[in-house]
Length: 637
Image 1 (cartoon, rainbow, N blue to C red):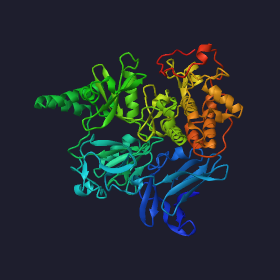
Image 2 (spheres, rainbow, N blue to C red):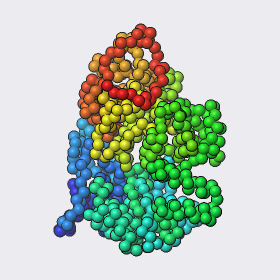
Image 3 (tube, rainbow, N blue to C red):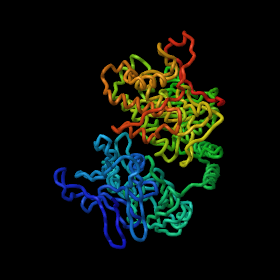
Image 4 (cartoon, rainbow, N blue to C red):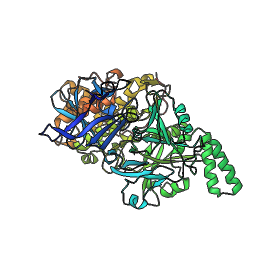
C-alpha cells in the first residue's frame, strides 16, 4: 500500500483509524503525506497535527530513526518524489507478513505475523511526550532524559515567557536574544542529533551539496536555518525562513545549521586566535586565558572532537575521589583502575584513570572519548567528560551502583539476585545496545571487547555496554577489516579474529553469543570444566544441544523459576551467534527480532573452537576463577 498523492489525478491514499475495536468506521486519526514545502508524513487528529514523522532523508523519516532497525527483516522502505506522484510504501523483503495500523487512541503500529500466525507488534509511535507535535513551541527543542521530557532553547535563544517556562508550560517556545547577522558568513551554528523542524514552509532543492546550500542560505537574509535533505547521498538542500517547529533530540538525529544573532557569531580558528590576543591585551583573568590555551593545544593535536565534552580539572576529580583513595576503587579495567567519586553537589561518578603501563596511549584514549561522545543509547554507558593534564588522562562516567554483570552471574550467592526475567531483560538490553553500535548510530562501531565485565548495571539492573578503548569505527558500507594487532579477551574472541586478525560486526555477534550462554548458565566460557569432557562452555552447550538436553545448561541458582521455552530460545540464539563461520551467524537486527518473537529458528552449526583441550587433571577440576584480562598485543598466526 502506498501513502501519498498522485499529482496528475489528484488521487490521495492515506490510512485512518477505526472508531473503536468493534466499529470499523473511519475514526478521527489519519496518516497522510503533507505536500506543503518539502513532503513529510503527519499523523492528524482531525485537522490538528498529532504526531509528525517528518520528511524522508534517504534512510528513514527524520522523526523515526529506529524504523529501519525494527523492520529490517520485514520491509524495504521506498519513498518516491517525482512530477507525477509523491508516496511512501513498505515492500515486503523477508518471510514476515506485516501490517500498519492506526489505532483508535492515535498510535501508529506495525505488526508482523509469526509462523504460529500470531501478530506481534514491533513498532509503535508516538513513543514519548517529545513525539507529540510541537510540545516545545517555536525554536524549542524537546529532550527525554531518564524517561522524563523537558524543553530547552538553542544557544542564542531564550524562553519567550520565563515564568511559564519555569512552570513547564513550554508551548510559548523561544525567541532570539539578538537579531540575525546577515553579513557573517561564519555566523551559523551546527545543532546535532535533531529531528529536523517542520518542513511545511521550507524551500528545497534535491541536487545541491551542503556547501551550496550554505551559500544559498547566506545570500538570503530571510533564511534562518539549513540542512541536508538526503543523508544517504549527502545531497539535497532544505532551507527554513520562519520559526522552527517540532524539534527534538534523539539517537540517530540529523544536523541542522542555525543562523546566529549578532551577539553569537560562529567561531573559527581565526576568531579563537583573536580572542586569545584580545584576552592578553585586555588583561582577562589568567584562568580564562589558560582554558583557551588548553583548548587550542588540544585542537592542534587533532582532538577537536574531545572538546565537545566537558573538560574537568585534575584537582576537582582528585577531590571527588578523595585523592584516588583505595577505599573508592571500584575495580581494575583493561587500561587502568576505576574509582568512585562524588561531586560537591552530591552527584556520584565513576572515574577511569589511564595507567601509564596499561598500553593504552593517547590514541586509544582519544578513540574512547571521541566514540562515546558521539553515541547516545539507553544501553551504552554515558560519558560525562574527560581530563588531560600532563601525563594524566582520565574519563568521567555516570556511576553504575550495581557494578558489572560478572559480579553477579559468576557468583553462586549474588547470582540469586538475578532471576530469569532480569537475565532476559539484560540479554535484550545488551543486544539492543550492540545493534545501535553496528547499525543505528551515526557511526558504525565494532566493540571488539564485549564481555561480562564490560556490561555495567544501573540501579534498576538495566545493562549498559562500556569500555570502548578497543572499539573500531568502520565505514557504513564496510563489513569487515583486518589488523596485525589483535586485541580483546580470550574466551570471547571469534575464531577468524583470534587466528587471522579479521574482525567485523560478526565478531561482536560471536562475543554476544558467548555472553548470552554465560548469562544462561552462570559459567565462564574460558576456564569452564566438566567431569565428562574437556570442552569449553560453547562445546558443552553444543553437546547438550545435540543430545537434546539443553535445559541442563541452565544456572542452578534459577531453580525451576524460569520459562523453559524462553531459556531454550536463548540457548538456540546463543548457538547461532557462536557458529564457526561468520557468514552463518545472524546480524544483531536478526538477533533482536529472534529474541522478541516466536518465529522458528534455523538449526545452528558447530560452534567455533569446538575442540577438546588437553588439560592436566589439576586444571580440569579447577574453578572458573581466572581473571578475564583484555590482551593488547597478539600477533595472529
